[in-house]
Image (cartoon, rainbow over the protein chains, first blue to last red):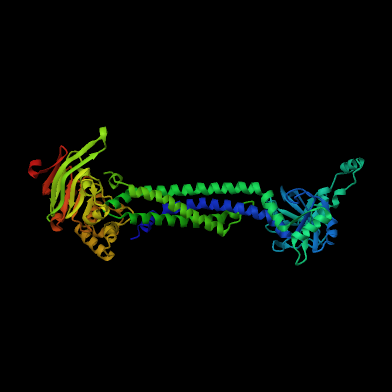
Length: 381
Length: 233
């Protein structure tokens, strides 16, 4: 006779609701871990999509994402002369208030040479339309902006046509990425009003002098060349800072999103601890609620081992059901969040082990009470 | 050995120093197989405490207790596995039926038998015999909450008898029942004592039940005195 089965069956509704409640708590923990994972993933989307071997930036700068960097656009041509360099491309990155249908959103404009050798648009992410193939007034947006192919978008004084739609393209802050030609991006960045141009002229500043500047030149190497070695040569020859792809990914996770990811990470750890305590209390209370029945069983001669088995089995069943409902809950709601939530099977497995161990440990407190209970007192003798 | 229960110089003191309360001081008595003995005393005199000491639930302060041919307590020494003693030798009946609410009637009665290693088939057969005896056979698959108080108490008695114990300790088994049902229950206990050769001690406050018993043990001035039924009545 399995006492755990009989007890669960007797209070099935209550047991399932408890398991679902605990499950929702675990679901929230899984979502928080997913937010943390999503933040780290998002931070690397753009860098991974461009995926060069080297990032050439302004001397003494950590750019283009950790610090601002300005270098000349034509440097990409000179870099070709360095041994081992195969392809180069100039990029600009700027954050603007981008118009949606009814409101504005912060978006990152990625300006690139549309006829160049390294495209930032990952073909796997391009879900509709095509790449930009004109040097002006074409734009690729993300699906979250809710534009359709052929939609016209006014930016400053120009009208841009949506030619492609990507999915899952965001910058390190979770803002959607908009792709356009380098010249269009520079125009948006350095488009001055007439009074400003007149003012600049009066000061002896040449108009649009900055439009020849970009934030970075990315480099792809020929096969067989080591990134570190070529980076050293470029640094020496052109007096620029050069980072490998690995460096850039490291900067992003350590410098750009470090604080926010640590914050989310710390919050997640606290949430796991609080959830564990709550689960422990629920299981402890469940055991105490049965203390009278347990006392009766002890009094009539049921051995402690059978009672302990019942509590442990119920704890494991509750843990498993809570874990399943937590996973279902998190999978139902994860795509409702504005930023990416990355649910990872490994995280779920680790959380399952933590929950199970915590549940069993907390049930041990209840079990201790059960072993120590005086049956006479418990039944009110 | 005819004696199922033998108690020698049993003492129970609760607390220490100024808070010390002496409940039983030198109880000596025996209960034979086939006897139904009533245990009477005013409230708080130590009836339940005495019953629980015999049932190895409460540890005495000193004295000796024998259950059947086994010594279970001897001046500070208590047999190690008290749960096994209860499982093997004693059937408990309480004032309230105290059935396990998540088990149905037959499961309540067979739980201990199955735990003792008796096959489910044999345990069920024995339980059904008892249910027939107690006229509750048709309730075998009911949950305790679906039975009346009297039916629940009969199930509790069946549970106490299911493992064929040598001793039955009944703590006011009729307290929650009306007069007719109370008489039925006590008659039933007497019948069981005789037919199954079991020693039964029954705590009661109800003087009407006393004529149905063989003997009376009365706790008076912390001692246990043997009384004849007519004297008490």
